[in-house]
Length: 328
Ligand code: FES
Ligand SMILES: [Fe+2]
Image 1: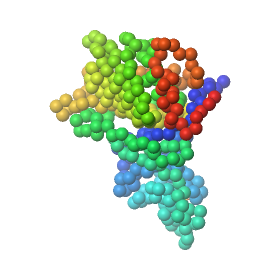
Image 2: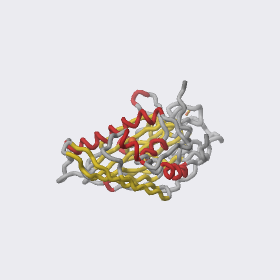
Image 3: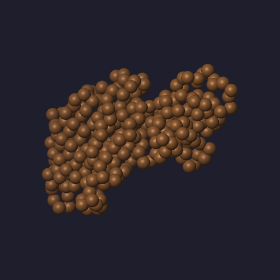
Image 4: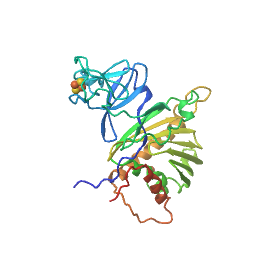
């Protein structure tokens, strides 16, 4: 029997769709996010572009080129992508600019936006796309993080996962203070101060951390800017900045990217030791959560106790990111 999945629609917000350095000028490729087939490319002048993938002519996918195994999609010519099927050209706004073998532009595409183009922002070494199920314009701005834009911090250490769950289910973890003790075996229940305001959530958590050298008092600061952008800062053992980015692939699948950086010491990247141990431990937490997330159901009206974290507050805050309220 198929398991009942979390019945959640895809929220709106800014979501990471690629690392910036994984998309060079002239690159194009197919990506699947937001329940859609998309093509991601970078023009020759360096502008990143995300369009709906299927050509308005005869439906070719702009993200799969003649040499599909290279991972390369339609060819980039100047500021346009060339459809691999009959070489119609499309600009970053999704307008057809040329049909190379036609005397006249066909009226169905002439002067019309024929492919949806998603607003993109490149910052923090990643590319964010704005997704809204009704195509509404961005409602807030991407936040720039000094740690992810500074030469004094190490190059990003990257990890990724694909989970069968919904963005909201993963985000609820932060508000669920009791699970840290039982799923992640923290020494104590962390003391958590969690505040929700507009599209932001801000958390400060103090917890004992187990290290080979004994227990250390640590603090964790986490900030979310909508459902798709955020960071967590760990202080106590080794200063660590983590961009934890969750992007919906479809209603029941998420693509998670964790990118860590730590301050350089005397201009050098510190390898190994506690710096590596903390990264490993944080990634281990995700592997511990995975079987819970992938097999749980969503309880809209859960039986909560006085020791639970602010789950109801979290859910109220998160509900603002849905274009339509979901019911079950
Ligand atoms: S299908 Fe794209 S040009 Fe024909
Ligand atoms: Fe967790």
